[in-house]
Every structure is written in C-alpha cells, then in structure tokens.
Image 1 (cartoon, rainbow, N blue to C red):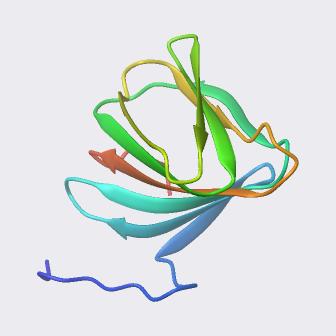
Image 2: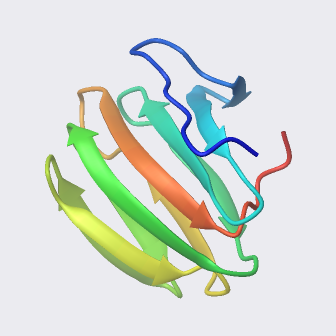
Length: 112
C-alpha cells in the first residue's frame, strides 16, 4: 500500500445509494474507511446497523440526527460524534435542507 492517497473535490473511489442517500467512499484501507454522505431534506437511513468497531462523524453542511442504542443525538454543522459501531445505530436528516457529513469507520464495514 502507498503511504499517501489524495482525493480531489468531487472524486471518490466508489459510490453507492441507499434510497435517496448518496455515499461516496473516499478511502478504504485494511484498518479504516472514510466517506462523505449526502442526505436530501427529510431523508434517512432507516435500517438499524451494528457491526464491529468504531465510527466518527463530522457534519459539514446542515444537520443530522444519529440514533445510537435508542438515544437520539442532534448534530449541526461543525459538530462531531464518536460511537461504538456495535451499538445499533441509524442516521437521518430531520431538516428541510440538504445535509452532508464525513464519516470514518474503523475497521471498514460497508459492503461496496
């Protein structure tokens, strides 16, 4: 593996959609994956997920709500959150505006 990977604005390694939600994989290594997630107004990833590891989320645009183990955490632009991935979790955009956040999973966990 190389020592450095650079992705320019608008570039991604892979992209998938979950309903209206767009997930753009920026990096995937043996130990982590980093992605941007774009959520239209009032959209959500309704399925509760749980998997090995940890996650970090940083809201870049708008606001999101992350539910972890039944508790809801509202996050606004610039807010940060960490949680254990083994706790059941899901994310939604409760607002009338688009939301974008950056997420890191340790270790990689999405099926691309």
